[in-house]
Length: 167
Image (tube, rainbow, N blue to C red; front, side, top):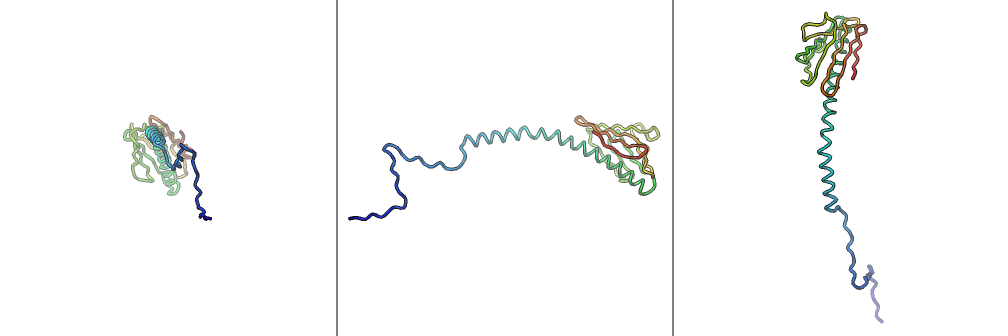
């Protein structure tokens, strides 16, 4: 009597004429990779133009907010120092200067700037000012910044000196 040793891996017999199919290996097929690259290329080509409009819109909004902040700073300075403060706007050069900041701020070239204020505040045909008084009131006015995409209006109330920014 012969004793056979037990095998740890039993052998599976295949029916005649059939071979065992190899186990599929994990990964991607060439077609799946090509489709993924095609989709990524389409996204890269179409997404940046969508952002350029929002960036210029964000720049417009930032410029309007910066102008409103300069007006608020001039008003605060007038109240704190108990003396008049002024913001001068040059429409042709598209820049402004606040007595509180004492530096020119240049607006982008694509902006159109209009100023509506009292005749006494028009310095020249293209320059005007908004003045703030020690009690917080102002000469009042409206500054409109606009470009191809957006338009913003900064209103300064003459009685209270309150500054409002509107789209």
